[in-house]
Image (cartoon, rainbow, N blue to C red; front, top):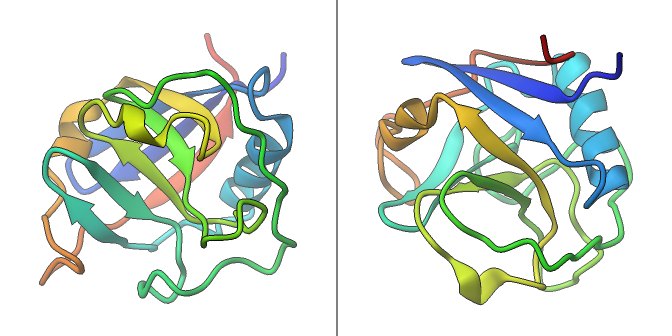
Amino acid sequence: MANDLLVMTLDGGDVVIKLRPDLAPNHVAQISTLADEGFYDGVVFHRVIPGFMAQGGDPTGTGMSGSHLPNIGQEFSREPHVRGVCSMARSSNPNSANSQFFICFDDARFLDGQYTVWGVVESGMEHVDALPKGEPPANPGKIIKARTKASA
């Protein structure tokens, strides 16, 4: 069975994300590759805005960097940006997504069709809610470990 879940361990516990290759196959492949290489282990959430989203995935923790893999072209869909949705962060260039992503705390429908949705939190959203807030947070929360796995 294909790995269709991403399990991200945060300080408070596990966040289980259902991957959506039906919406964004290239983004899911990149996130999965990076997770299984251990790229996200120890990476912080550098931008956490209450009522909006938590952003992470930059190994420098600054929001200005990405991974060793090439950027990915946009895979926009009609999937709404609502609580628990995981989407790719990018620069003003729609084809600049690399390793940074965000998880929506609340409805952010103004992002629909402009950012690539690649997953949705199935369980553990309370651990995302508990991340320290700030841009950047004084003591940012971090991803202890992230790996893909097959659903049961």
